[in-house]
Image 1 (spheres, rainbow, N blue to C red):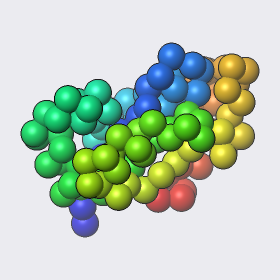
Image 2: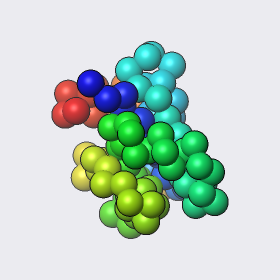
Image 3: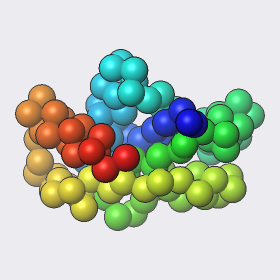
Image 4: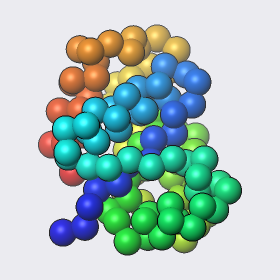
Length: 111
C-alpha cells in the first residue's frame, strides 16, 4: 500500500487554513504525511518524486483547486478533496477544533 501524502492548498482563507490544519493533524496521528504545494512549484526534486510514488491527495479549500492543479502540472494525478464540497463556507466556517474533527473524520471515511 502506498503512503498517503496530503498536499494542502494552505491559502490565506479560512478554507485554506483548514486544509493545512487537517493535513498537519493527519500527519501527527500517523495516518498520512504532508508536503508543500510551494515545493512543487519550484520543482524540489524529492517533493515531485514523492508525489509520484505516493498516494497523493490534493486537499483544496475551494473549487479553484490550486493543490490539484499544481500536482497535475508535475504529471501527478491526485485524489482530490475540496472542503467547500464538504460544506465548508469560504470566509465563514470557523477554523475550530470541532470543525477540524468533523472534517478529518469525513475525509478518513472516504479514503
